[in-house]
Amino acid sequence: MRAGRVRALAICGPTASGKSEFAARLAELVGGEVVNADSRQVYAGMRTGTGWPSDEQLARAPHHGYGTAAPDERYSAARFVADARAIIAQIAERGKLPIVVGGTGLYVEALAGSMPLDRPFANDELRERLRREAAVHPAPALRDWLEAIAPAAAARIAPGDRYRTLRALEGALAARESPQRRLDRNAPSESPLASGPDTAVALTIAVLEMPRRELEARIAERVRAMFAHGLVEEALAVRRAYGDAPALSGIGYAEALAYADGAATRAEALAAAIVRTRSYAKRQQTWFRRIADARRLDALDSRTAYELAELARGLAAAD
Image (tube, rainbow, N blue to C red):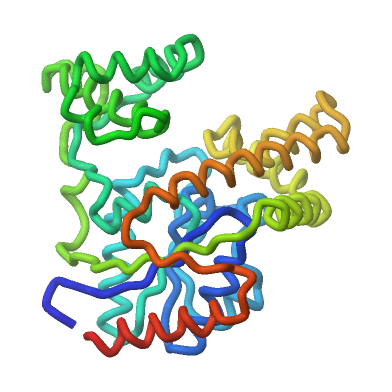
């Protein structure tokens, strides 16, 4: 391992594509350790609804980064990078291969360095303003707004990429405020990369792909299993402990609470959660298709496990 530089493998893909199973099997095979890169699985007490690895998978190899934040915290990509770098450095010191796994493309790209995080932070008030604007204005209007205030940022974003457009607008609008005004509005003024080790991560990214119909069937089966294994009770427990925590707006939890509160039948809540999860999976697939130089692997192909193992061994040997 070069000083300050660690090689790691990332296994990405949409929800229900089998990432956790591939990562656990691979870590067990090559002597690696798994690092979570899912923005929802960081929350404690939300194991069922966010789809943590199973007990069997957790037992195969060390797993890190699951349940490390309270549900009422706002966990950011910048915090993830700092946390992941520290974990990856420790894994490398033990002579093990870090295997990053998750479906949050922003986190993976931020860790890889292809998604810059050194823009000014946007605070809650600014984010709320952008949510209101996004609800009223179509995507082209948001794009025009970005081009007007930050043409260089707009030039780096595909015209149809609504998510990145909104993120860029956050940064551009935050940058227009004076440092004192940011302090007055309780917005952090330091760089989000100011903390954490200096370890650079050379990330090789593998993306699992799956035919739409198979993925949709898996999603429906997974959501039904979550409801059957206590999602409603888990959502109620989190609400009792943390109130209307931001994490409870996530897929599955909002629907589970709607059922618990009598606002929907169980069948309606289940159907709504399946629809939202499928929509989320589509957004994930769109994000991962745009990552350059990623290895794309068929999640249903029996050779994929072998290809991942060869990739992992190559990374370990390179150090």
